[in-house]
Image (cartoon, rainbow, N blue to C red; front, side, top):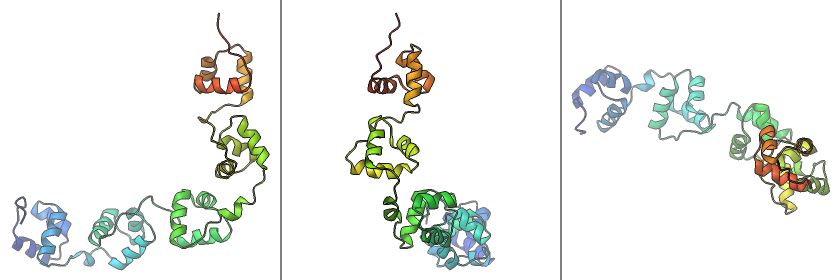
Length: 244
């Protein structure tokens, strides 16, 4: 018996016999539904929820296994996410993570087309990590190994762009591929990732340098740091500009 509760076992039993669920009993007794649930279970009373919620435990379990979150399960069962939450907790089911907005069949169909996780994610409006999670759950192999062979650039092209100080994203944009593919081949070639992700081109830096601007001023115009401007200026063989 918790010293904090303000009701007797008999009061709970009487309200339970009226067909009320834990939340409703809690409202009448001025306590929480979780407290009511704990006492009800101790008394060996089954939940009245099945008479009101309009779905079975198995229906919830099946949707939960698909990786759906409470809100989405609630929409499919025509109930609130809080009701789903209460039933899920009662069944000992852990909350699923990020909500997905695609079905297993959609994933399977796109996977059969040879798409990689990133591309599937783009098609269904989800993250590649969530696609990866459910693809593994379904026992589907990664299509990535087949796609890597289909690259449209040479090692030398990657090396040349890397030597210009470009980061993977910038190299990928120039080569017309995804940056993960660039990362894969850069690592294979033993090339370290270039530093901070700059947001300007060599030509932009050169043009501003010709105007006699110092690194700090160039950085302000390009939305970058003075240090990063300095790194790329030196790489381009441009002398330091000093104001007299």
